[in-house]
Image 1 (spheres, helix red, strand yellow):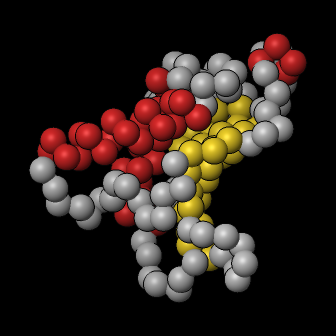
Image 2 (image 1 turned 90 degrees about the vertical axis):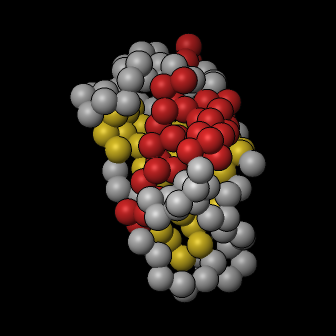
Length: 139
């Protein structure tokens, strides 16, 4: 379900104020959580927990960043119409997973700048649909 960049350096090699950019890769082909879903609260809670856990595990080797900016990109293979606002619940669960991993202490606006999710059409041969969560340190 998840994979990480192979080129990430551990915290000790980067220092607390050095630039940091990492991208987490998720094999979801569609958003696990959307703003338009109508499901039982227990099922939604279970999916949210799974997304948080997957993000937390993937980000476990990331250093504590203090403040960060996150961008969620949904890479798609078809030309269907999609609404980026609809993906925000998935972004929220992933941001909570970053907090669970200790990347930041909270996902409040003063510590985490959450950019609007992006939807990008892949070209032929660029692989299957997937999600990427970019995390970068900001000052």
